[in-house]
Image 1 (cartoon, rainbow, N blue to C red):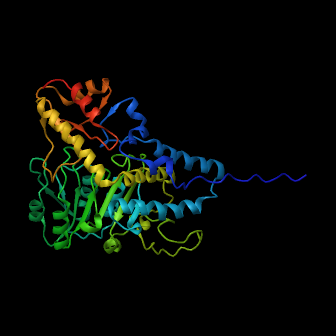
Image 2 (cartoon, helix red, strand yellow):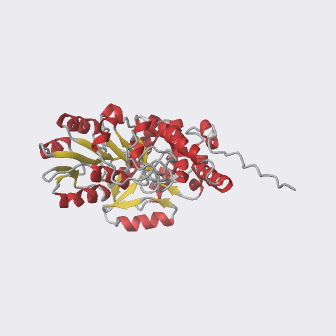
Length: 399
């Protein structure tokens, strides 16, 4: 008797409406974030909260591997390289061929630092208040004879004129945080990019504190590289992210590591001719984190549905409410807060109580924020609301 062959379940990887995203609005988005029932979570600049659609997307991929093993692998690759990269590109004003998947922002910064053809005497310009990931990869280049030139911040601001003053004919790269992690200062990207393009210098940006909270158009601005980890404002799984490499400069950066995904050979594993893929996929040296990328895609789809402009407007309304309440209660705002320099971050200090002590008190009361550089830092996202800002303010000790 012949045993019937079981039919493998139809994969549910590519639904047209991923977990109700097509019906999403600011009026309903709160229902998609379970953390709101437990916490007043204002720490999205550290690790963003995960939504039900993101978790469902990850589960869908895991169930497909459970039920079908490798059978869908060619379709995973095709879908990630086309549909998912198209949506990421749309979010930041890029082309899908300019997007590569990365596991975190540090990896993307390393592509540029370790892939540029440095010569002794070249220099790179960075700021003196950068997150360590945008420092160590440049300091490491000293053994190649590369000089690091430091922009001295002015009250937490990185001025374009100060960048210009450090440039000379051996300046190769300016590498900055688009938004400074400690105080939320928003770099003037247009003026910075214009300066770099005028001087023939590459502009490399850590955009993890920008994308997901502020509108970005890399093509219009003339930015060369950005790196974005998914686990902060993108509200995507840890271990996900994307790297943008402008087509016009792609051949100026050598992939620091290479593997079978660096080339475009599909299943021909015995062809050893090392010819890079014609797109940013050349930086994906091996199997990417498909599980997390499915969650990243859901997070991107949610942002596209709500709209980057509307998300920025919503977040800045919340930070304005918070700043007004903090000032009324006697707290000192340490974030630059002009219209052209504010972001989704508000940093502040109490007159006499240490930030760590206040953060611990708030955590006990169910309110989450961060401590950075001796100041308290809140970072509300699009799922947060005015009631949570008021709860946060009411929980603070009087100044």
